[in-house]
Length: 285
Image (cartoon, rainbow, N blue to C red; front, top):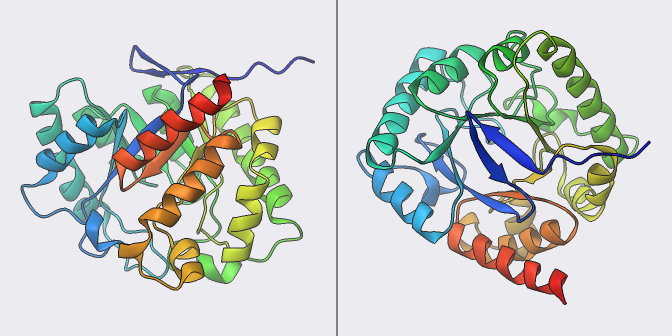
């Protein structure tokens, strides 16, 4: 049977063409993100969003819950209080901006979409909120289904696999089937697959998963997103800090593009956009 690969995202009536990979800029509305450079100072979110859009971001991913290993829990109310004003502020200045909300909570996702977000980025892939899939189906916005085990507080204790690539594919396929079942009675939902680099995975497992990323693009018809920007797999391997991990990030983003990723979720938009341009040129010759 011929596999039909999804080439567009329907963002509330606006089609985004994925035949050329896109860049998603990270806007962390948190005081404790693992990368200090991504933490927003109050009032600077619009300025940073403007720079990211100018540098080539197609999406802006706004998150109010730090998911670094061992991060403290945040109440849904506080999470919503962090992200909703940022979404409103960005859209006031840039009405055409495509905003993603980075949350695993259905209620926060709903509020963010009502505020103007057009995409839901769920690091838990529906495993931490049983209402998420039904909410996604009701809202009908694109949904990033990411692989994670446990919670941000417990995930690193769950990095045991027979084969990390095959196990991640199996677990994502199971969640995707549940989503498709629930969305059958709702609005059509475009899904993006994210293997979840750094979430319940060791550095060695992350490298294997990236090296075998093409397996995901072979199995799934859905487009694949890679979010490895400045993560510990890079800076610990290079014996540097997260602040010094830009070059390593660009290297691995380039590998991801060559292996089939069509969205890069990054802290540094210009460098990722340049990687897209150069890898696209390689594919043309």
